[in-house]
Amino acid sequence: LESKEEFSHKTLAMDVMRPRRSDPPLSVVTQDGMSVEEVETLIAETSYSGFPVVVSQESQRLVGFVQRRDLIISIDNARQRQEGVVSASRIFFTEYTPPQPPNSAPPLKLRGIMDLSPFTVTDHTAMDIVVDIFRKLGLRQCLVTHNGRLLGIITKKDILKHMAQMANRDPDSILFN
Ligand code: ADP
Image 1 (cartoon, rainbow, N blue to C red):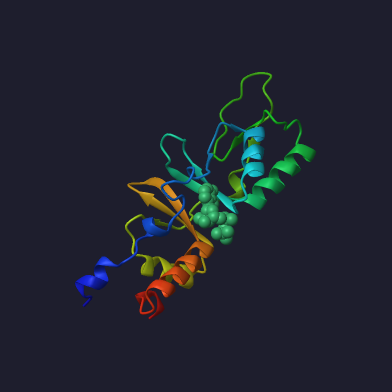
Image 2 (cartoon, protein in one colour):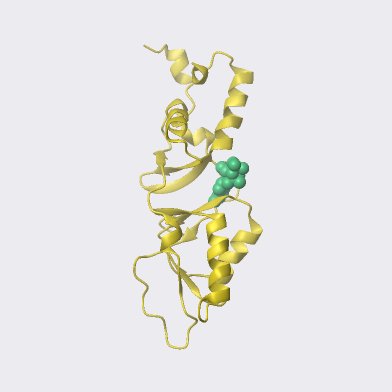
């Protein structure tokens, strides 16, 4: 049994995930409707290894996860080889692409590069469990949700930083058992 004191010290996924309260919101891509240009801007303005794919900015419902390098390669390839893909083309991660208005740029279908079941935990999951999952499954990142809404992300490096901080503050941390 855990003592009360130990329990009150328990770090939760919400304490380690990014963004922090003061940070800009999570950088996500929506499953349909973003233009090639918008996604290229997102790639140019951030350095994240990947982006959650959501139903819409409003819903923040998780659909999948796309690696930055796969996005870059696919867009470059499509611009070079795929008939007519240009800055104004819409990107779709959905299974079906709705009919495009006449004379609009051809769409770019990217469902194939999306991880359809990225690992997720809820914001109240204890970090010792999250660490265990990272170790056992060899995860690089994990998404954090609350009532089905995407809240944040935890990367392997976030965990290592967190563990280093805990080691400084609390050498007997349960994370090191
Ligand atoms: P690493 O943690 O290995 O440097 P990243 O470059 O992907 O990996 O992430 C850098 C930081 O940004 C991490 O603290 C991570 O939690 C956060 N992060 C990762 N992806 C995103 C994203 N799409 N939007 C906002 N923050 C992110």
